[in-house]
Length: 302
Image 1 (cartoon, helix red, strand yellow):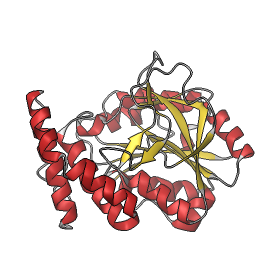
Image 2 (cartoon, rainbow, N blue to C red):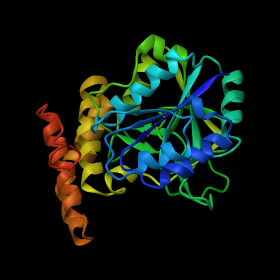
Image 3 (cartoon, rainbow, N blue to C red):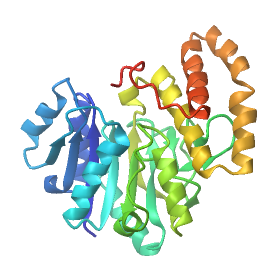
Image 4 (tube, helix red, strand yellow):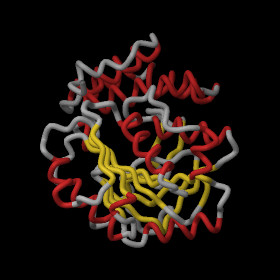
């Protein structure tokens, strides 16, 4: 199977080199790696170009957001004859055997269309970052299965899941041909859940592949797991998702777990010094409900 990889960089620093080295070690040649620079100013793309002159490298000139930048890579990959596209976050590391595990999963379940890895929090592989996603179970639209759990003995079975995260997602060519690319209405976050929802409506399924392993730091480009940018954009994107794909269950979960509890969470997290991020989550919810565009300038992303 001819697999191409798409990596988006926005001031990713030295982490790009580790990511690229892992993708190369897994068996994807430089010419099949589409490295899209999203207006970086830290010199990271120049460093990548020096070390890996054979990459399919493109510069957008400005921060277009993940979905729009990744779509440039997908178009190029498909034009070059890719049979599948592997999305990789540039703060993630691909296990050397992951590509082979993905290809075996495609052989076992070729009609699934989308395949996601077992993701660990770090190189020790003691705690999980995610094993696919569940939608509408508690606060936030998407819950990472297994997040923060001890990895031993958990989520070891290949199975269908509600959704897959885009930090390491293999998508067959047929999926793009049938449903199109990532929706650029999302700047970053939740575009993967939307893509999965659209794929499911078209008859595809999401396959969790535990033998395909990834290590992922998480939220590197937006300042960490509980930063204002991540909380705002996740909340704003979740409302957009509900407006596009929301069911009664998902809407009820949203109002009960995210809206009505927001004042309580604000007070509790303020005591921990994280009240500012919660305030930004509330603003993201409000802007989404009022159908305002994401305030990227205030977040320093434009």
